[in-house]
Structures are given as structure tokens and as C-alpha cells.
Length: 149
Ligand code: DQA
Image 1 (cartoon, protein in one colour):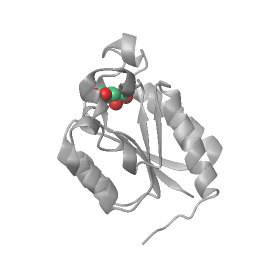
Image 2 (image 1 turned 60 degrees about the vertical axis):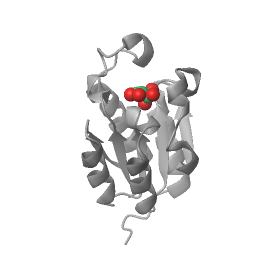
Image 3 (image 1 turned 60 degrees about the horizontal axis):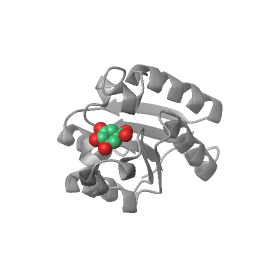
């Protein structure tokens, strides 16, 4: 089965109460339950990792125990060369997801270190964006390769 890592960056653990007018009222656990249910329908294996720490996210990326990832880098999207370098280093396709549309927000969010290396970016669709990313991964991998070197 195709293995998908869902990687969630800083402050996404606060979803539900964090600026709900921008990010909605679903908690991260609720979103992850939705993702897990959709992954099961698509026949994908999914693992989740959230951290507020750049290095912890990079360590998780480097494990390479997945075929593709769905990455919401949150604020690090706009600041982190190191996160970009890690995603390039592991040679796994990733789908960039943002609940909001950063392109329509503050000027500092127009800087994006991940966009040009993502297979696809899905923005402004709320939690549905994660499901669309899974659909794209299922279409790309089909029943799935399982183990990479
Ligand atoms: C976000 C958008 C980022 O600009 C912001 O820093 C976040 C959340 C989103 O999902 O809309 O933390 O990644």
C-alpha cells in the first residue's frame, strides 16, 4: 500500500480555537480523523506528525518511511530554507496544503520556500485540501508501491 505522511507545522495543534475565522473550528484531531477515513477509502496508509519545532519536523521527514507526503508547513513555509532542503533531500513527492490562501493574505506570506518544489499546492480549501491531496496521491500511485529504498 502507498504510505502517506501528513506533516503539520507549528501552531496547527491549536486548530479549533486558533483564529477560527481564518482556519475554521475543526480541531487537528478531527481533521486527522477525516483524513484517516478518506485514506482508508482510497486504500492509502497514513501517518500523522505535528510539531512546533523545525528540527523535529526535519527529523520526521528524514525517516523516509513513506512514499509521499502532505505538508502544511504553517509559518515555516514562509521562513524555512531547512525545511525546504529536507523535503528535497529525501526525494519523495509532497503535496503542499494550506487551510487558508496565503497568497491572498499578508505580504510576508507571499514568500514561500515550498511552493516551487511541491508536486502540487492546494490552498484556501480548508480541511478539504488534505483530502484533495490524498486523491491526487492515490491517482499518482494507484494501489501503491510499498517499499522504497
Ligand atoms: C497556514 C498558512 C500559514 O501562512 C500560517 O502561518 C499557518 C497556517 C494555513 O494552513 O493556512 O500557520 O499554513
